[in-house]
Image 1 (cartoon, rainbow, N blue to C red):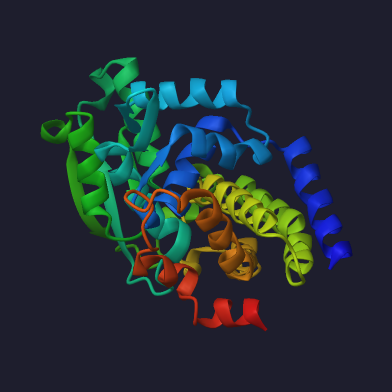
Image 2: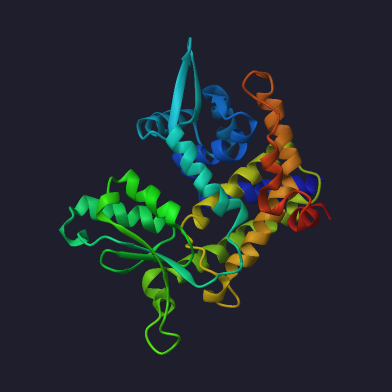
Length: 318
């Protein structure tokens, strides 16, 4: 048991030394993954205690939450000399959108339909507008197949419309459902994959993820401390979130047979469930003194990565 704890601590230390998490992003990860299912709010002092073992000092955290409030990711409440934080309405909406990609992934079947976003007046838009549209649509998984034309191989009308509404460009854009008609006799959108999406870069990130967290799964299968389990869960989901939100998650038919994202997702799910109970125990020990705000975990948390009793959860328990 002691050897497992020491090995895991060395792996955590190495990760924090060579790839430390960014404080702002880590706050969003923790509020979405760990705090949200327990009611969604946390005292600043408790958040400091949670992130300090993850390489984030108090001064940096205070600066980060201040900026997240200014950017409308978080909202704060003053209670005397104490501050309570939770995701804002916007932050909660963005977190819900991301959660499906993080925990569930996309259906393996694809009917060949595409969602196109076309901005006819894109060439006359300001540089800031063009940059904002491109960033938001690419973040949602779209690829730029031509100036002002973005494509995604599945029905993402709702996501596209939310992006356009946010940027106040709905009346200047076309959102279309398309199906390729060339039938192999002409140019196919799928042939532009390397031009539209950086799959090589994403694949490299998935391989690095497996190299980093594979040993953590082995070390976590034996007796470890609740605080270590929470650190593993937080760092795993934080890195997974960073990668998955840069992955367009193209249909299986468009990916190489040896796509490393499949093995990485299985590893992430197994590791998540391997440390889940102990990580929850750590949260209980730290936060349950305030039952008015720290609630029992909501049922949806047990459906992540195919469910606690699903294939990955059972593998983790084996």
